[in-house]
Length: 168
View (cartoon, rainbow, N blue to C red):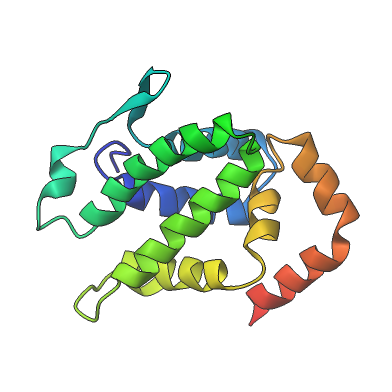
């Protein structure tokens, strides 16, 4: 899979890998790639200006993930503003995942078939609608963030509730 051309599919695959293997060298590499994919294509050009670069393929009506790819670039622009206002990296990570999972869930139509639309997207859409997204994001960030590891250690109840939710 070409991560640059199939950004949404790459994001979903990386998320699932990190759910299965959250704390290894491979997961550290996967988390770094996931964050690069979520970063979208926006660049600060001045103190109050930025460029949003869209992949032309995302604008093709035949691209079933085009709207979500456009949204990724918009999120990147929003992140620049939120970062200036003091949002932490973890807060942005949680917010970005919430946004992408919800937009994908809302884009799902009966005509959309296949693994992405019938497995990954319903799972992550349900996660975004649950109270466990914060726990999930910290769980998959263990390989990179000491803060995430400490949070998991001190929030056993939330982790147990997330585990129970996963089992259903």
